[in-house]
Image (cartoon, rainbow, N blue to C red; front, side, top):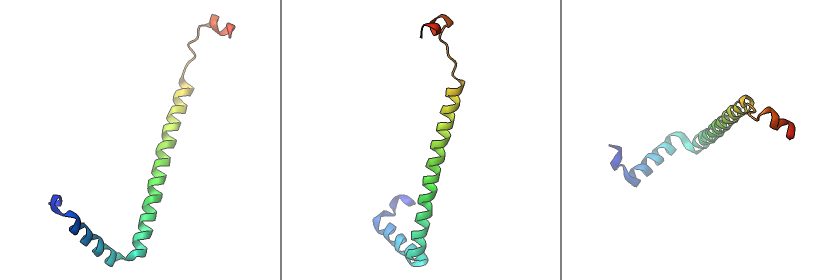
Length: 71
């Protein structure tokens, strides 16, 4: 069903949405969507950094005792 919408159909849908909601509401909505995406990316990056920090803290020093004294 959605395979044959085409460019004219998408333009018609965009015009109808613009008429119904107005330019201001759509602009505000897109701004909020952008903020949400930014917050999501920041959360993912913070989670990945936290996991890396935990792995680094759990890493054990496997250097033999005799080699530690030489350094």
